[in-house]
Length: 168
Image (cartoon, rainbow, N blue to C red):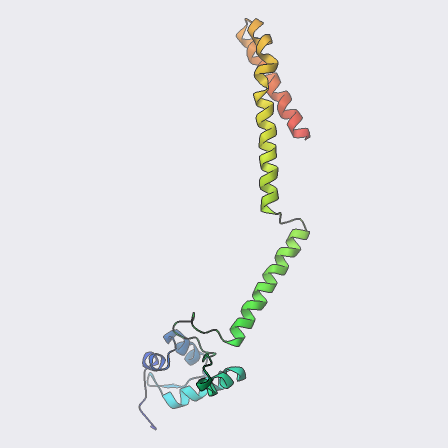
């Protein structure tokens, strides 16, 4: 052995990667494991071969204050996003926007503010029609003495209102 062999967790911790990332590379066969341990030198070399060329360039000159990023998944992946991930995120966003645009033009999506306006307008029309019932029927109902006739007049008026609204 060239050096001390490490467990996957130790290797990940020492290099700032997640244990899951190292385990993924082991399962893919990119890092060799013997007796449950990893040769850190060989493993690091294998990971460096996976790196984007732009990442290697950025890592080679940290003295200029450049952010060091890596194609591996850092433990806190909010700190650095590599070029490939950024490109993937951008393309996923573009695809979602294109899908939304298509669905809107195909009539599957509608502007939410327009729906709210239409619902408000429809509600206002229904409200006004229902509030007009007393003005239209007050005299007729006051003169009526048969409760069944009062009920029938109210039902007819409501049905007329609903029929009229359904035409609109």
